[in-house]
Image (cartoon, rainbow, N blue to C red; front, side):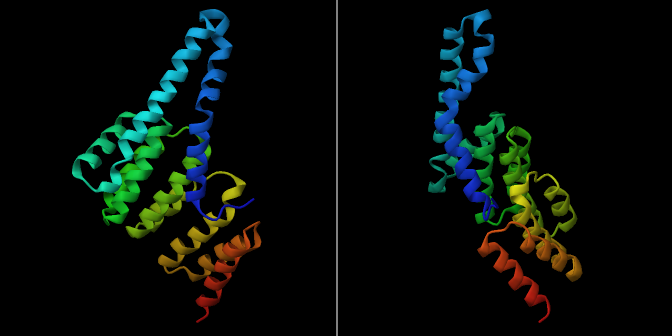
Length: 205
């Protein structure tokens, strides 16, 4: 199944870690439970996961206020949390900076989030957003290279769509057409496929 928007994937990943954090923690410690006492480690890992989740919520919940202290707190958390929650915080911060048209800071946050991410789907989301920011910064070659980090068949159409935009920005209409044609022929959703076909038609205008 193709993905229309990486925002949906971000929300799915957030829900997964929120709802399954305890189960994941239990799974990690079961293998060593016989050696060190599974009850102690179970409690410790679950507490750690819960604390990390709460710290993330506290760090990003007030970002919408626009207050400098809220932004500073979120930046501090994202820089210090070298885990999935740090990646999520970097994603949130990147969006704030994009809204402020501070693309350099948005790129910095996305690079930081990418370094902290371990989940392949999360890495793909971050790479897609990073490529979009680099395109806005008029760095098409960097954006194309970033797209290479998007892994998985489910991303084929959305990557093709963005690759077409990047190539078009370089003046490569033939490359853009090829990217969009390949994307439209993939297992794209009807909406995404139709959008790419419209872009192809516009190349002839």
